[in-house]
Image 1 (tube, rainbow, N blue to C red):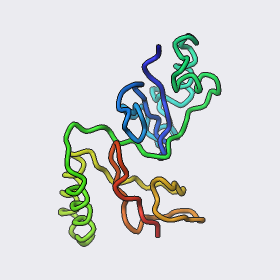
Image 2: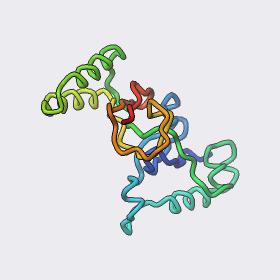
Image 3: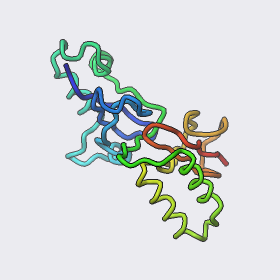
Amino acid sequence: MIHFSYSLDAAGNLIRLELGMFPDALIPGAASIASAADELAHPFPWTKTVEDAINEIRFVPQPHLVGTPAQAISETRRLPQSPFVFVPPSPDYADDSQIMEMILLYDELPIAASDGREQIASALCVVGVQQIPFISRYVPELHSSRWSHDITQYAQPGWISNTKVYRKAALV
């Protein structure tokens, strides 16, 4: 049986999946970014493209694909797209209430206090919590309100871990 597959995340990154690992993750099995979205848009000769990922799966014998997410990729020649962004799993842990306190403290600091904000973001990153990256299209799992126009900025950043959206990004 095949032990890997691929998916695209909400930001357009090519994600390598390790099937059976991280079953509770927002993107089950997400192990690493195979290629970033900007690299996929302007690939280098060594960039693993979406086509490369699909071909890698297509050349696995069919009996090894049956019953796995890779089977649908082989049959449709399309990668699934997750409504979440990839966040690497973290071995460190913090209580949800502590994480929310840090997020609220981040919000209270003025933008001019960038050192304090960077320290909080770094501390959250250590426990596997990151800001939701800017995504210009509306994604209900990541954005707090319905938006009919192009998104140009966030009024308030969203925060996400490998297993949980702590706060959706607020749209302007």
